[in-house]
Length: 161
Image 1: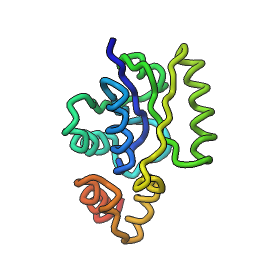
Image 2: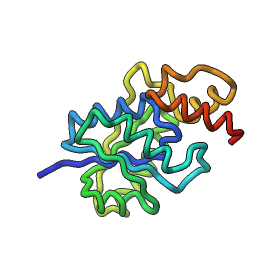
Image 3: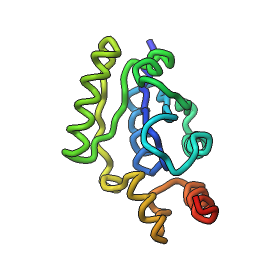
């Protein structure tokens, strides 16, 4: 039986922390589907660009697929054949939010489990919102994101978006 994890999020933008979780999840699961949400908070990068950046970043891992989705995570997880949801937890604030979502998803998903992974030390304090804010203020975020993301952020800033 194949064990597939769904790693859902907005990935606005994808960070090295996200990729660290994917790589480590491949040690536990046979496959990982990275689900890029079309819904949720307002995003800087459009859905198609977030999907393309992620696909480029996970290209070295054939067991990883990137798919856009909208609607309930549990419905998308079922459609992808996922047996678990993958979530990263950087600290106590994340834990509270993630525990609430895991409980709801377990109820709505008919027992769909959530697997929490702590970040690796080098990515523990990096978030997409931090990347967006530092970049918007002219800071260098290249150490926090995969190749291509800085260029995408630069293009958005240059266009005034």
